[in-house]
Every structure is written in structure tokens, then in C-alpha cells.
Image 1 (spheres, rainbow, N blue to C red):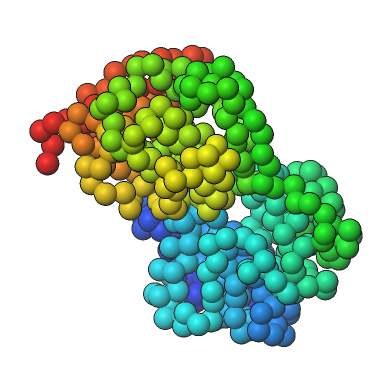
Image 2 (cartoon, helix red, strand yellow):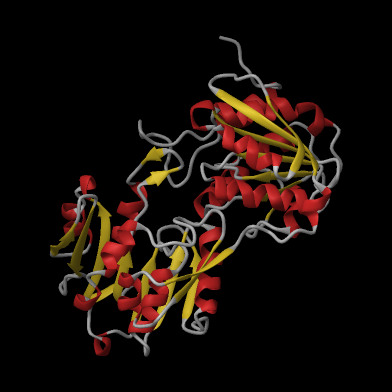
Length: 403
């Protein structure tokens, strides 16, 4: 089989990359470079070779292949935004391993004008969410140069006609390339002038009055603000709804000085914690930049911004030891289109570490995952609290004899 890499130097770079925090040795772990990365770089090769400073932007780089590959193919510099903090860290780790000068690429934590202004070539790993794609497409159309080319790549089995329609709403020209190695690109050109000054679709704001949420938050309405990439959007997801039905059994207010919404999404649970525990500090963390922005906006919309501190990190790794009395957790079970439980287990370990002795973790998860033994090991004694046809809620108490 012949290599599809467009240059030997590129092949060497792509072959050296590793995912993070996975070390690449697990059979079910993610691959550092996939066929979509290679197809994007191959399609962009001529544009990259003639690019000028400020021309090239990468969005959604998973582990650094697109950024480092673009630099190897001639881009003088690259601006980068990736929603997931672990993907961002993987880029930095791989760049350091390759001794790539930091001045050749700039990582932007927020997707907006700073990263996209004047861009003439945007390389995008297609998100699975149409809402996220809508926000990205609108931002590219608004801030990039008029002659920008957006190359959006994905696995054929995950691509839908609706993705073409989303891009066509912001660009006058949208076409699909031929498939290669089960990947395909959508090529968008010609930002629609009428969209440049139109109000953006995202973030969206909604006032939620779901009975479970209102009862738990002890208010008449909870406003939620959601960016396109935020899980569940401006709504209450099924798992969180079930978790909220158990709120009357959560620790009493006098026992809680510090509370954590671990994996905060749009911040609904952070708002509930701040409402139920008016004297407590609330920490909210998520790996997603869009989720953290949504959490901060949701807290502000409910008048709780001074009480909720939202930070972006991987599975709560930056939270201090023994710093919380209660943790709420609705762990993810998907990484893009794949079902993976790594993040959940890291979050369980975080809960066991950050809870004070006697502190409680309230967790909701898909029942088939059968997480109770893992929760017992990571945190402490765990009881089954509630269950419906899809989800289970458990309560774990941090052992008092743990060091």
C-alpha cells in the first residue's frame, strides 16, 4: 500500500503523534491521526504552500495533526481553536515532542473574531452536532476573508445531507469531494454578505420551567444559555432530569460549604447548587470551551455569576484535594461518535479526591454502564437511589479513612 501523505516530512510528523492523555497503547484508545486529517491536509496542500501569515486557521484539531501538518506543508503560521481541553493539551504535547517553535502557532481558547479574523483557509474536523457546525460556519462567514475556503472533513458514515444545508446557509458555494479511506470533505466558499451582520444563531437562551428543575432550584424559572457545542443545548436532558428528582435527599444546606458541578455542560446543575446552597461556593468544570462559556452565561443570566466559578479542565483535574462537600455528576459516555467510558472513570477518581471525608457524590449514568463497582472503588460506599428505563442515580459517600 502506498502512503497518502503528500510529503515525506509530513509522513514523519503524522507517524510520531500520540493522543493525550491516552498513551496510544490501548487497543480501544483513540488514534492520533485519522483518514480525515490526512484528506484535509492533502486537499489543502497547494493552498498551504502559498499561504501568507494569518491565512490559516484550524478548528477542531484532535491531537495536533492538522496544525503540525499545515506547518509542515508550508503555512508560515496557524491559528488554532479546539473545543476540548484535552485535545488542546495533546497539540501542545505533540508540538513540544516535535520541537515545533511555539511562535509558529497560536492556540485560542475562544472561537471568535480573534482566531478567525481575515482567515483565507480554515481546516475543520466536522463536529457531530449540527448546532456546533452552525455556530462554526456562521463565525467563519462573519469574520474570515471574503475569499476564504472552508474545508470541513469527516467520516462518511457520520456525515449527513443536513451538514451541507448548514454550510449553505452561510456560504454561497458548497460541494462535496470524492470519498477516500471512508472520509470525505465538504468545501465551502463565498460567505453570504447578508449573514455577516445578521444576529448569530448561537448562543441561544431559553427560560426553563421543567417541574423537576424548578423544584430543585426553588425558583419559578431557570434561564439557560447554550453555545452550539454544549451538550443538550438550551434544554434539560433526560439524565439530569432524573438526578434532579433526588434533590430532596442531597446533603442539608448547613453541611455544604463547597459544591461542585463536575462536567457542567450549560451550567444548569451549577445554578441548582447555588440556589439550594446559598452560603456555599460553587465550582463548575468542563473539558469543553463552549460548555464553560455556556455555564458562565447561564450563571450570569440567573444572577449567580459571583457565586459560580466555571473553569475549563480535563475531568476536574485542577480542583483542589478535599475541597468539596457535595459533587453532582452526569458523566459523558461518548467521545465524538464512539462510546467510551474513560472520561467517566477519571471523573469518578476526581470526585473521590476532591470530596472531604463524608462528602457525597450524586451521579446519574446510563444504566447499561453499571458504574456502581467503579464508584465504590473510586469514592466509597455507593447506594442505588433511583432508576428509570434509561438512567440510574447513585449516591456515593467518601470514606472517612482515606488519606
